[in-house]
Length: 201
Image (cartoon, rainbow, N blue to C red; front, side):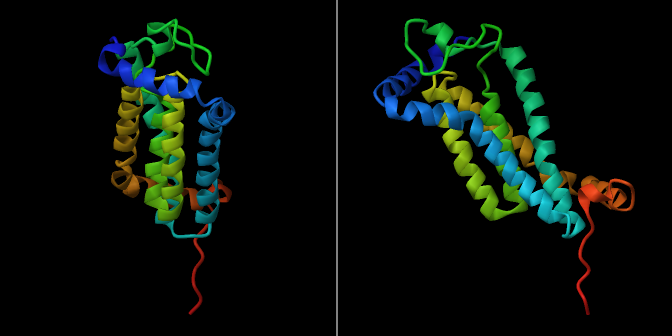
């Protein structure tokens, strides 16, 4: 798959913008990975709070890492099937902020964005405030992947769709996850999922 034939012009426009904004390089290089860490922190906070909330709340919180793992796995399968070379390989003379990845580390779709959007949508199911913050983080991560020269624009959009589709299956898993949480709260794994607070009457 020749990604440059799809939207190589957009890639060149963004990397050209990157060359003219050196003051943004450090932030983008850090945030492209640190943003994923922030999403993990958000997921961790919601999980911690859910330990003293209803079973369905904990089930929704557990869907966040589940969705991320599923989306990441599907993303890697797509990468192997499509085998799109990185844009830095397609345009070897174009300077990029990030170093070029190995030729076997394919470009379509972006794993970073798949993970970020899957986490953001799953977090949105748990908490509107956390989900909106996560979506903003995912947006910056998506832009950073093209800005740094790691992906084409279509790699980012496809990854966002993939991550969102996987995460939106969350409501369908509510029954099984709720049952799982019930069993965990009655067993040795109770410290991980806590117990719901019973309101006094």
